[in-house]
Length: 122
Image (cartoon, rainbow, N blue to C red; front, side):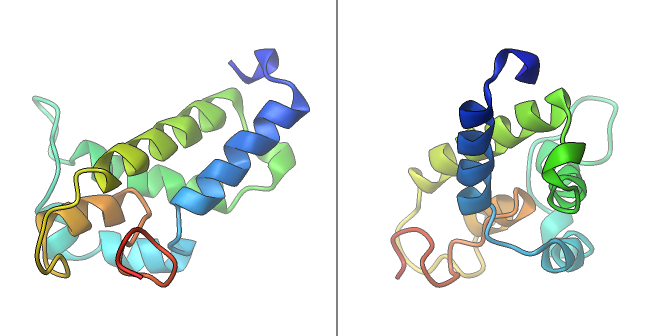
């Protein structure tokens, strides 16, 4: 896919990904080690890890690469993450979301909606 992307499109994907993913790699890794992280998300039949949890691990890998190291598959995943975060943010439930499955799921995808500047909370 990215061979069909020009430099400007790649930059736009990286920028959107950088905005959507507001958790640092180490912070996301710590989150992924929690029971709360493993308690949410949809799991493919025959697998034990949710799609979001798998995505979180992949996001950590991508965030630790240089721009030159990013692959076509990385760009595809970055677009997927941006789309997921945008769709999920639009489904924000009412009330206190701090300990909600909604927030936990977003955090698996690298976005904490309670961080400063994130979502409609601040």
